[in-house]
Image (cartoon, rainbow, N blue to C red; front, side, top):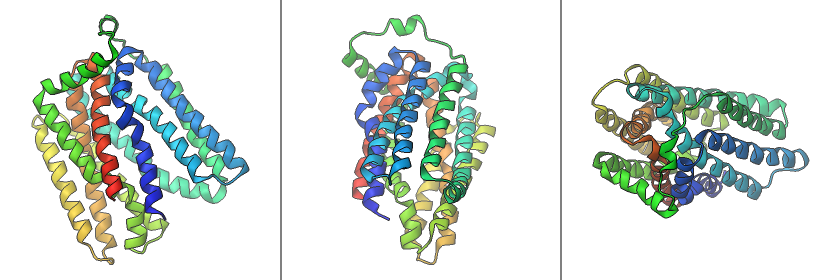
Length: 326
């Protein structure tokens, strides 16, 4: 029930990406991205294993959970840009937007199913057993990546400038050469500055302001994920729409209107808040999915690791500021 603890947890989840992102991007472009994804998943599994063992003997202290969150976020900071960088090697360029839509739909399904499954398991299993499932998921992810054949960049990776600092600067230089993508990055930074505090404090809004219970929290999360599922499917079906900047503009408008209405609701307006959550979720794929596809199309594959790490780092830097203010 502590806003400070929730904000700290969210902060630790994004801090490594914000601080180490540019350096991580260089490593992603230098080395085998497949091995990087496998290694990142194994780091996440190892961190979860520590929690599983400790939870077996004692109640988990908050500080230990925070440390594990930090370690997991380091793994994610490697995995996310590596995954985004290999996607154009596997998916035809004209299908990238559709791929982003379907990917977000699959992700949203987990958001819908997870609260219900978690509530069920928590009622019948010990906490360490539940955490072990997360570890198993990371191991399965590693095996899956190991099985998939991912094309390598070959000679293009070997010809990269060996100067580490210069390679980081190349990521920014490539990004600034495309003024449209750079402007989109600035918009995304503002987007994250506004949205992340709200996302982190959603549980407290449901319980404290609307006087709800954990069930109400699940309802809002499922509503958001359901909207995200529908939005992802729509983007997947109609991803060939040419004027994608209109999709991004509409997404930001929908998010802004929904947040404004949510902020003006009385304490009796929980139902309307749930509807607003669904609209927020619906808008997400049309921003993040389209943005990712545009970067994948416009940036050469040998620079994608650095560009995605850099953009993630810049947007992540906006998150702590918003969270601290919240």
